[in-house]
Amino acid sequence: MTLNEQVTVIEFFGMPGAGKTYMYGRLVDYLSNRGWKLGVETGQARFGRAGRALGKVLLAIKELLRCGGAAPTAWRIIRQHGLVSMGRGLRVTINLLQVRGSLRRQSQTARVLCRDQGIAQALWSACWIGSGIGQGKQLGWDDLRGDLPYHFVILCVDVDPELAALRTKQRRKTANPLDGPAQNKKCFIRALDLTGQVRSTIADAAIADSRIRLLTVRTTGPALADDVLSELGHRVECVLLEHATAR
Image 1 (cartoon, rainbow, N blue to C red):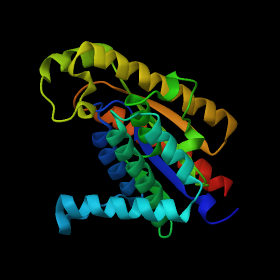
Image 2 (cartoon, rainbow, N blue to C red):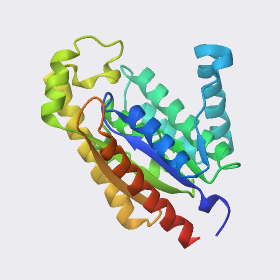
Image 3 (cartoon, rainbow, N blue to C red):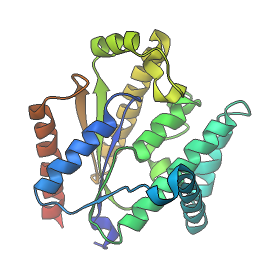
Image 4 (cartoon, rainbow, N blue to C red):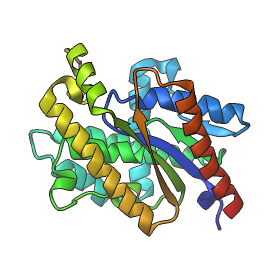
């Protein structure tokens, strides 16, 4: 087994506003307090938002040049959105390549990498603004993961329909439709259905590849109870221990 194959990536996916970032922060705290050395994504605060955006683009270009196999997938993401949504397709593509590039970079110094949004969320976003899974499964997990040989612990954040319906009434305005697809009933139903489709796609990939583990956590409120978060941390830690034992 090579060094890269010993790396485990923990990432979340689900509809925007489901609580991925909140759970990510609490999970990082839980695992850090339990003694795990984690590689986490850090922003380039020194240069502000513009510097961070430029860093993403440069890292995406580096990943594209390093791995020629990423080019067909990148082109498929952009092409499937057509001229109207090509800008969004390009943004998703850049984010995907940046995620893959940052995982390679972080794997040089850490064996457990944590992200609130990763490859699974890139798949969700690509399918949200394009034809995606609904049209002949044009994009799948293996397409976006590419040649990354890591173990993946993928956490699907499932939204309780009744809770989401309540939050829909409370959240009227959003700067970006992708930041709040539950802003109306039609968008919410589509986002909820898409989350289920992506979960099924990743579950199929997990059956075929033992390096993938899919866990589901249901959002029970704006601030999850400590016992729910502790249970989540315990489940993730059990998977990490299994991987450590297998090595």
